[in-house]
Every structure is written in structure tokens, then in C-alpha cells.
Amino acid sequence: MASIVEDENPRRERQSDHESFLAHKRMRWLKLGTLISLVAIIAYALIDVEPRHNGGSWYGYTLGTIGAALIVWLALLGIRKRRMTAGKWSLKAWTSAHVYLGLSLIVIATLHTGFQFGWNVHTLAYALMMVVIISGIYGIAVYANLPAKLSNNRREMTTGQMLEALSAIDRQLESAAQPLDRAKADLVIAALEQDVFDVGLRSRLSGHYGACRTTEALDRLGDGGDAAIQKVLSLLRKRKAQLEQIRRHMRIRAMLEIWLYVHVPVTVALLGALTAHIVSVFYYW
Image: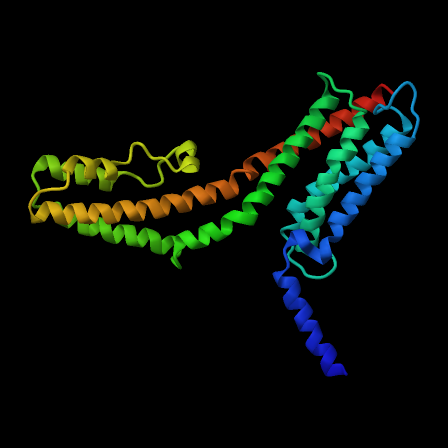
């Protein structure tokens, strides 16, 4: 009997290891987040507040307290990520709760406002919260799809190996360009001197590199010529293919990371606006 239990425990651990944070514990946090949202909506419909629902009613204060506590707790994920542990409050469990309870904030915070918005710190806090949530949804979407594309693009090569392959082609190109006349050799040298990583964010995200000197050298050298030209053209095509692989890698990595440059700073701004919102409410209470 003991051996059966011992066999089952590792199996459960292996299943847990392969389980997505979105499906953690049979979507426990999705169910809880949905339940919280439904209770808030039903209570909003049944409770009579005069003259109308607003953030200053007792129900508004209740939702506001819940929402503020959730925002602070959810912001602690950044600290929690630095402590990798298993068990009841593993990083996977915390991330799952972060996602689904974060989504429930859309309902809680919106009902807290009573659908009353204006040009004030209260609406600013709500708007910042929505930006944080939307950027988080984008983050979930890209992490569900892009890592597989990143792996496929690598073709079992590490980033270092991709760069080394480019360097090897560059060394061959530098040698092959020696017999060319000055004008043609300059085209190859210009391509070799171009920094692969010296590109703007727009090019990195779009994958379009209009000022690529390797492409320019291929276009200007044409398709014909003697054996020396043909060798250079062949190497330039290899270089272009390798550059495209590296640039796809850079694009996917940028798409994976760009949301954090919105999500994290806006979360900090949200905490500031939330503090101002709470202080102003109690000051004028």
C-alpha cells in the first residue's frame, strides 16, 4: 500500500509540473474570481442605494476596500517571483491567482465607481488599473503563443550559436571581398560594419529593416559576374538568412518583454494614484 502511495505522489508532482498556471488546480482561481464577480454583480442589482450607486455609499466603500486590498496584494507578485517554492502557495499558484483575481477587479472596481467618472484622481486610478489589466491580458496571450515560435525559430541553436554562425559568415565574406574592385568591396564592408542590434524599437517589433546594408549589397551587386562575385553573393545570401533568423528572434523576444515596460511602471503609478484616491476620500469624508 505504501509503495502505491509513493508511486502516485511523483505522478501528481509530474502532472503539476506540466500544468499551466492558467489551469492550476482545475482552474481554482478562475472559479473563485468568477464567484466574487457574480456576487458583486448580484449585490449591486439587489441593494438599493439612494440616490444611486456611487463610491461613497456603504456598498461602494465595501467594494473599494476589497478592490484596494486586491491591488496591493496582486502587486506583491513581483516580490513573490524572487522566492521560488513549491506547495500551496507556489509561484504557479500565486500567478494563477494574480491573473484571475486581477480580472475580477474589472467588475469590482467598475461597480465601486457606480459608473460615475470624471477628470479627477479617482477616475485616474481606475484608468491606470485598466491599463495594468489590459497589458496583463496581452502578456498572458503572448506567453501562451510566442515561446513555441521562439523555440522553432532557434532550430535548436542558442542565441550565442546564432551570433557565432553570423560571425563565421562575416569572416568568409571579408576574405571573399578582397578580389573585388573598391566600389563593390565597399558595399560588402558597409554590410559587415552594420551593427545587428543598433535598431529602433519599431523595427524590432515590426521585423522590417529598410536600411539593411546586406540587402542593399545584394541588390546593387546583381546576380551576374565572375566567380569572385558569385562567391560573395552566395555568402551575402547566407548572411541575410542568418540575419533574418536573429531578427525574428529579437522580434519575438521584444514582443514577449514589451508589455512589462507598460505593466510594471503603470502598476507603480496605480499604487500612487490609489493612495491619493484613498487619502482624498478620507480627507473629505
